[in-house]
Length: 582
Image 1: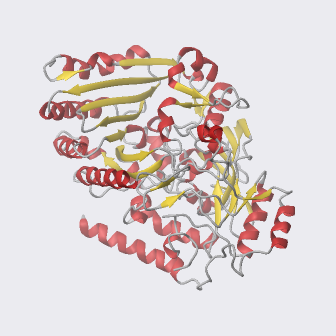
Image 2: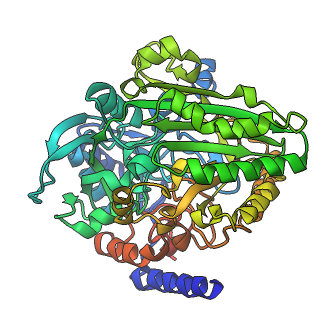
Image 3: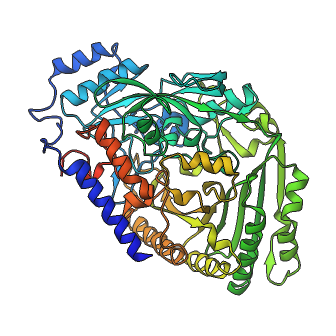
């Protein structure tokens, strides 16, 4: 297996060199204050070309107490082009405003900005939702294309991709600046259907699609990218293209998981919608083991339980273990009744209750279900589940805007470390479960480890797997029962210096935990949207054998590397900050 990995890694490196290393060496991208930077007359011309929607990049007044309070509001951060949903990453990046921002309202504005950036050799940044953990929507001294105002959502009873002649299917078209809450509210609350999307309500639609896209119910409805029917995109030559399986199919395929900010600027997406299940629901449980030995037995019982019950289209979200010897279940389900969900979990509860000397907390189990059409209905949630959500508190906020309470801890954070690994379903075989439990327990001695069952497609239906297979996402995801995530962060660093000593200590613990877990899954990849900034062998980890094809497509549509993001396709040809060609 090691030999195979080395051969694959070598082929990926050669593919990168062939696609990008042979290009003519260009001067470093222009920076403010240098002779290459556009003149004021140039900037004035761009401003006229985009209808006056060009302004210097700037931060809000971070000394204002009212503004500082709003830094815990993801909707407020999303409305500020100078901010990002994370404030930085240890030894990697810090949130910084761009030199100039084009507030794009349509594809013509985007094309004008792309043409300007290409003509003046500028570092270009694309920002929609701004949720990139790796800082893809952030770069000082850059020109930003801000797509947030492009947020129109249109639900279709029947949609046929341009030039395809395909049978019309129910779908939804969303602007590049749309967030998932608004897509869900239009499709599920409004039209009574479901669109596969992200869990956090303020995540941008376009970025999630381009990263592959795993949401709470991916085992049931597949990846977000697999639902993509058509995209409108502005490529590096300034052309506005409509791509789908019939028109420019290679570029279309690359957009389905090939990474955001890499192949162009998406301006509109159309996604297939799905029949809405009768119910969505949630299960919560916290069991504490009184000894390490009891904890390992509990983990073993859970792994066996998960193999038989949780790898189905019904289940998603996560189960977490950690140094406190506590098994914490925070899962969701679809298409089951509340009693069905409770009955399914009863064997695990019975195990804990049968050993009160070893375990406590089985009585904390709670299963709740509601009509699926109400899952993102703000009025319903405010009335019947007020603790589950946090409404946008701003006086001018839309009354239906909210974020899940559990996601609030991520708003504006400074990341110490974030690491992920696909956990292969082979570890759920009876003969392999012991190895999985041993590694999971060993990792938990260092730091909490979560298994996100919705972010591995093992257990999905055959047609769901087939659709995901026709994307650029690493095929490891198809045979994974879950994505393991180990991470840590501290509060936002927009207004001050983070505690670097704490950050380094916690980062070391996260890395030690992942190293211990990797004993069970040394060869699998990682999820490009949720991964380590310093991911080794990232081409293979994110895309596996798909990388050479992605590199060819990148060369075809962006031969000079106008679109560059950290660990994006072709980024091996650029310096870490994206300003100088290697």
